[in-house]
Amino acid sequence: MFDKKRVSRLRWACRRGMLELDVLFMPFVEDAFDQLDEQQQLVFERLLTCDDPDLYAWFMGHQSCDDEELAEMIKHILDRVKV
Image 1 (cartoon, rainbow, N blue to C red):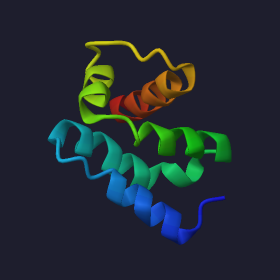
Image 2: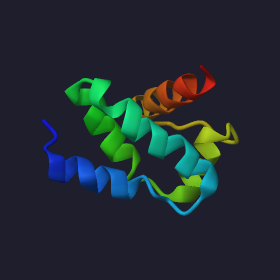
Image 3: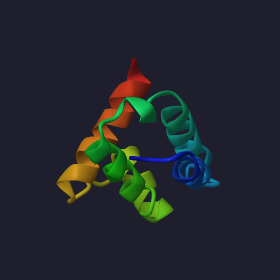
Image 4: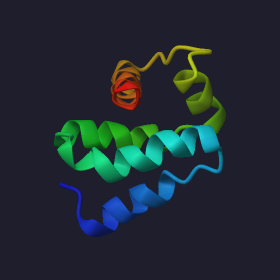
């Protein structure tokens, strides 16, 4: 499970320096991260280790992510934003 210190590091990692990514990650980690199961939380943590140009391309639909778990998390985040 994610303790407070680990969640704090995730929050920090969500601050990407690209506005397009910040507006996706910051609200998601604040409002939805706790609702994910442990496996999904690990996938989200792994997603944050990806490079910004890749994340930008995946979230903006310029490229598809080959990693199935990451692609599902990207879809989950984007679906949440569209609501």
